[in-house]
Length: 261
Image (tube, rainbow, N blue to C red; front, side):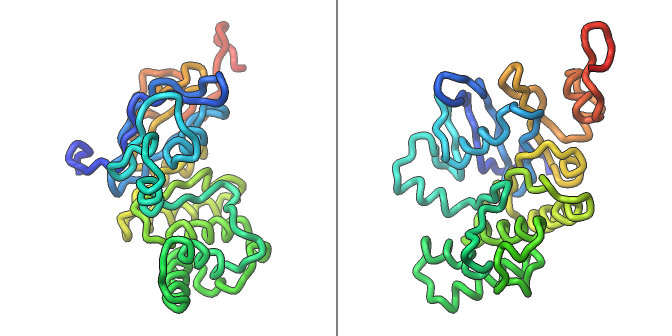
């Protein structure tokens, strides 16, 4: 479908932000469309994870607006923000599972906080989410008993507990071997297509970007803003920005003498 015909679920408008007096992101504007896998990428220190924190309301930008499912979370009151919280889930880079709880308990904790469901219903939902990420037999396992890839899958299951419209994933392939990383990519694509979940993924892992992305934006720490927007294949072949082409083609940067740095 033409992206111009699709429903916008996230809007970032003229956002600038950082920490203290340090500006990390400047005049950022983009839309995320319902049902797509959208990647925020760039080199180290470009502000990818900071951008995600602004998008989920963990940090406030210096200026600009962030609309999530129609609500500007930069100005939302507590009641409005709690409503927005139910519309998205978050998987942090290290999984952030509670080590003293098994996987079933980790997922049920979210349901206990946001719903009044009986315990049996919570456990049924938790089991369904574990089944959807390929961990149907692991509900009684502790996070310490799992591999890195399994912990990330479990964190996605927990993020899906409230049936969110949007999933934010921070570096889902980081620290995984190539086979496990490919399995994670397949899971993301399957969940996107079968459940119509919108994914916003922060990563710089090129194989995963090409495997899952419908569209992406690329941030540059030198200019502190977006330097490319589009499909990965289009940016690899046709970007007029040499640094963007170098990134997507995994080429070393050149210095002013034309030598590899």
